[in-house]
Image (cartoon, rainbow, N blue to C red; front, side, top):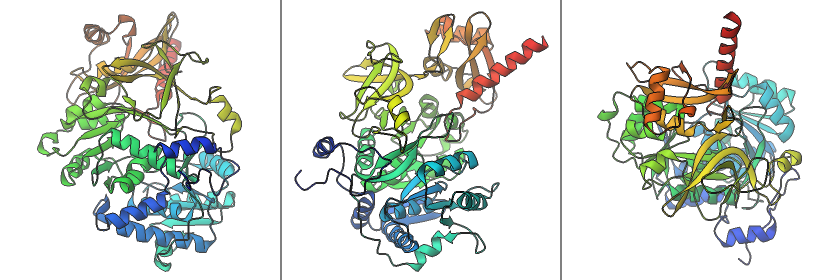
Length: 554
C-alpha cells in the first residue's frame, strides 16, 4: 500500500477520522476504495459514455452527460467562491436535477447536508447552526403545495447563507439558477484538493424524535460500503434499478448515485409514488433491482394489474419491511433488510430461502462488519437466540457525529461498537447467522412482565387472507401495564377479523397467546415520519389517547 494516502488532505475540526493505521488496513483489505466519488463518475463516463445513467419521467441522461454537466456545475460553484470543505444544505427531490447537483458538489469538494424537502424551520435552523453552510440547494418544483424557494430564501437570510442555488425556478425566483450556472461555465471542474479519506457528504440520522444528528460519510468508505451491499444482493455491470424514495436519504445516495458509478448501472427515478407507474416502469425498463418501503407493500400486494406486467427481469426487491406481501404482488423474490446511516447494512441475497428473506433482516454484507448483540445498557453479549441491542463496528461505522462529542460518547461501547438502540436476535440458518428485528428498544411490549417484540406478530399478520398489512404497538392497560394493539389495513373487499378470530389465526400459526393483539384499529395507511419510516410513536400515542377518551367518557 506504499503511496496510498491514509489521512484526509482537508481535515475538518468537527469530524472524527479513522486512525492512519486502521485506514491503511481497510485500504489494503479492500474495505475502503482509494478513489473519490467524482473520479468514480469520471471513470464510469470513460467506460460507458453513452450508457443511460438515469431515467426520470420522459427524460434520459447518459453517463457522459452527467459527467460533463456536473463538471460545469463544479466550475460554477468554484466561481461563486465556494471552496472544498464548505457545506451546502440540500432540499431537493428524487430527480435527475438532484443527481447533477450532488455530483457537482462532489467534484467541487462542497459537502452536501442531506436534508429532505419536508423539513421546515425547526430542523433547517438547527442543522444550519450545527453545519454553518455557505450554500442552500433547493428544487422549485418539488412540491406543488409549498413555496420551497421562498422558504429557502427566508432560511438563507436568517442564517447568513450567502448562496441560494435554485433548480427548476422562474426568472424571477430569488437566488442563482443551477441550470444557468451549468450553462455559463466550461466543463473543467476545479482540481481535487481532497482524497478518498476526506468527507464526501453529511448525512442525517433517521430517529423519530428530535432534530437529526449529522453523520459524516467519506469518499472511499462510502463507495466500498455500497459495493459490498450491492454485491451481496447480486448487482452486476449495467444492471437497472428503480428508486421511488427520497434520493437524499443514505440508502438513496448508495442505491441511486454510488451504485450507478460503481457498476455503470442505470437508475430509474420516481419522484412520486404511484403503484401503477411502478409496475409499468419495471416492465418497460427491464428493472433487475427495486427498492421500496413497507408502507408501499399493501399497494404492491393488492395491485389488480400486476399479472398484466412482465416482471421476469426483476431479480430482487429490497424493502425495510413487507417483503412477503411485496413478493406476493410481484411474484418475484423480495427481501427485508436493515440499514442505518451510521454505517451498517443487513440483507438477504436473492438465493436465500423465502423464510430467511421474509422472516429476518438478513445477514452482514461482508466479513469486515463485526456485529454484537448486547444486553441493553451493558456490554455483555447475550446467548445466541436471545434478544438484545444490535451493536456493530466496521470500516464504515460511525467514528463520531459531526460536532457532537458528547452524543457520540453516549452512543458507543468502550471498544468502539455503535449502539443502535434496535433490538434483534441472532439465529443460525445453515452456515449463516441471520438477524431478526425485534423493534426499537422502546417499541417492545411489556405485558405483565412478559416482554416481547412485534416483528414475529407482524410477519404472521401479513399472511392472513383478509389483511393486506398490519403493525403492532403497545397500548396502555390498567392491569397488565401494556397490551398489544394491531393497526390493520384490510385487503380490498375484505372485512377484517375480530380480535378472537385474529387470535385463533395467530395461535394456529404458533404464536404465543399472550402476544396476540387485544385491540384492532382499522386503517387505510400507516403514519410515517418525515424521513419515510414507520411512525410507531404516533400510532402508540393515537391508541393511548383513544383509550383515555373512552375511559373518561365511560
